[in-house]
Length: 451
Image (cartoon, rainbow, N blue to C red; front, side, top):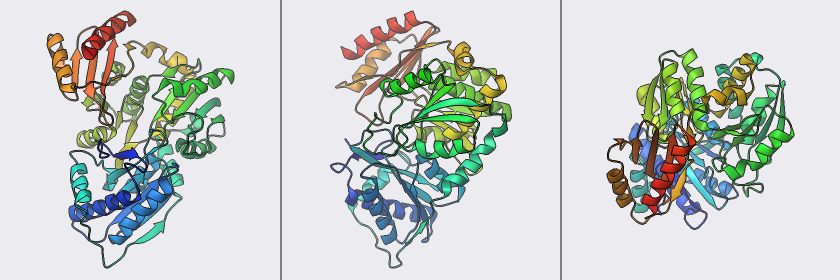
């Protein structure tokens, strides 16, 4: 498979992505940005996560930019949200972040953004970048670039994002946080320093690119087992889990149950609409109907998007949406200087809401658990197109959308089947009004796909 994905570059190190290729990607991006901006002097941010291979890859990314005559802002070891903030807030021309997000330890990658942390991916520059890398024709600038270290950005980011909540209204709580030895530890540790009323119980906070405790992917239930147990053992108010590069965040309630991201997204839609009445809220097409319900109930404008953080951010920019959320735990805020993931804002707003309502997270979300969900089910199939055609024939009487894969909607259940943008898989997500219909229809669709 190509390392050039829909939203970023990602592959196994060093077989698929190595230092030489990382340098070429940086050189190609430098040329693209100079061409797009029609200027010779540009400034690019470079950051990296805690993976074992990140320092050597990052070194070659910086070298490639310097050789291309670029001024490099080295923001050091950062989460992806902090990287986005550094590009957008300080008005730089783009950025390259060495990270493979939630992938296992043997992977690494590069996330790319333009000015304002605007997304860069397939249909939006990735194909051209790949072509330039493969042509291997780069201009070595006579005027070499330089590197400026700027490693205090996190504190500016926290100051900006704390403006979205009233910290004084957050009551004392006990919170267990599992960051999977990954980048979420960096910003959550600093954020909770400003909330002395919170008793923070840390799990797996030491940065370690080998992921000794478990994979840094809270979307997989098995990676949240220890967190859920610890919440119960500590009699905590809630738990928080973040992924490898810290751009996705998940919450566990006081009974040890994971709160569906679609419900968190709906809650955030309500809170953002309180401050921005009548605004647009973006959410991806995968089932999570509670989000749409809550947007409409609170006078907002729902805007459904394709799956993928870069695609949602693009639509947020186009529609002027104040908030957006993806079913996989990405939550985005609109800032005066850009649109990007804001897990700290989501955390603060949720804590303030629970405090002001004086209610537990379990009781708060209980009335929002209206629908039943299959979870995301992945299938390896030889002919994905043929499977989608079979589903269209079988469910021809449904309301069908082809915005991203195929979405079939009936009054009592609805589902989406789409080709993964990052893996060779077909993904099914189904939701319904009761558990019985979810089990029945999931089984029925599974038989069609696996036939």
